[in-house]
Length: 164
Image 1 (tube, helix red, strand yellow):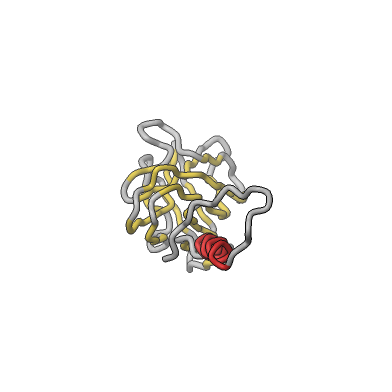
Image 2: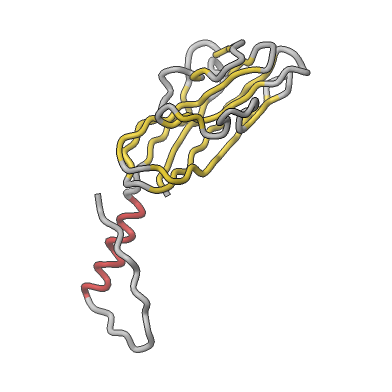
């Protein structure tokens, strides 16, 4: 992987040399090669459901794996989901290497759904202070009551991560 070079402070009448242009090129290459993993437009046979009141891995097998340089991640998902009752609440969160992003002992997740008809869940979060190395990300889901259904038989699921 290309290494990021500290950008120079340009001053008036600085000479543009081949090395300085190569440094700029190297930083552009670094930005293009940042670690990322993307599941997009994934169709999974059969809708996924849960009645668990504690976080469980949603859509097992739909995890992201990436090797980072150490820094921050931008993580996102887009899917269609519903509850079986209008007053019921379903929660979503992300888990990185066993640590749930938002929950951290709170009763609710980072994103919640309260609807008895399918609606789109779009959620993007920054996750700071990620150490260098191999990481696994998963979507977590649970309910306060009732049943949460993620439409996978007829809808697509998008799940992605990018080191910033």
